[in-house]
Length: 356
Image (cartoon, rainbow, N blue to C red; front, side):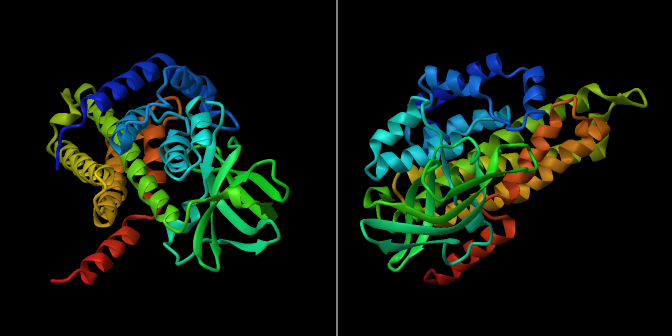
């Protein structure tokens, strides 16, 4: 494994940090917190204009961008629309749609959160053959950015296994209802009632769904790394400044130990995430590494988020401050695409099946 992030990915991450520093003031973030849909169209347009959305530098490039977006809890759909949907569209023969996403003219959503939380055997939607194409029925809950997306990548069970279908918001039989989630992002319930699509709407073959899942987990871990990294920085700075009994609280042994444990947790998330990302980018088997990375992103994410709030005390949950965004973002990422227990079980099953 090469532990160095490629130079072009580092430069791209630096550009993203410049843009987010310029665009995301605390005042702007507070206004977005109060909005019905927590989506920063201005920041999204700036990323598109800087060609960040179209800079396909592989899994490592996407991970580098997602770390930066996680550091500021940026309310944009890069993970699902670009790192997962656009890459899948380009990989499996729909490059024209990927180009629309890269230009900022199209936002895509990927409806697999519900399937991954409990790791079921099949998607919660089904598709059957009809004259001239397919008919889709079923529902998907908590579809990320579902209220602002125009295109949905929807896994559905068919007679020959799970396939991924491209469904448009405007298709007849598509129902979308906004859902409130813990960090205020724009998610939706997607209802499919006899939605008719043609064969062009089928994305690749049975290999697409595992491909989507792997990229989604890797991207989520990278975004969680940025969230936890910045949350720890904010907490360490607060512990140096906040005084009790005429001493910085960071000098107290109990506080110092919690911060040290949090540092170890963040480094564990960093190591396991980049190993999984690197193996994906190199075309190597990565299922065990992805399960390991997601376990750490969830388990360590829980500990770091709670440490940050506990050290901050009441200011940690003050809506006028910034830390509460990191707490809810970390807690959401903890359970999205399966929590620590689900991925530990997945890893255990894989290790048990491997020859001794």
